[in-house]
Length: 178
Image (tube, rainbow, N blue to C red; front, top):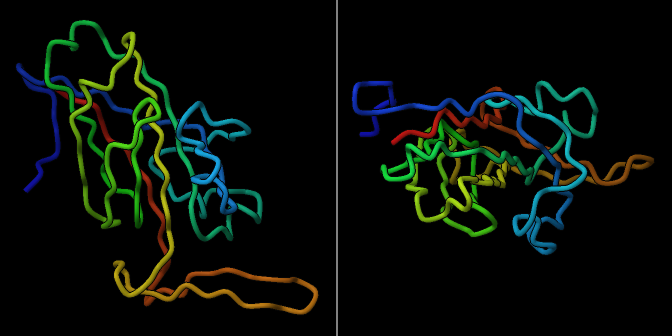
């Protein structure tokens, strides 16, 4: 069981929630290797949050598929000799995590926390965290759902998730801790 990290006499917790760089992926992000360098043409996005719910543009509100989040952080030198762990509260439903452009972890399980040790990936006291998140529902996700693509005259292809209950896409990074 993974406990929620708290500050103690021997553990420091740095909260990474707040504004992250955000980008919708229309199907080219992995092919173009967006994770290799800083994301371009991003918009600010609150984390934790459901981008579908807080996105003002229809394109964000209705998006189904991959999106990208990125944040570059400074790692205090005093922590460099410690075991540093990046903990995600959740990423709905599938997440691929890259640190300074290197793939380090894939996690499936939208409502479960996950974590990874980041020490070897810190460069010049900096860490660029890039996370691709996919909100498509299928028979292997919780909630179980159906991914649908339908053609409509005058609209073209419309993509949507049909969940068993209210749809929820959540991305949340709670902390870096040692």
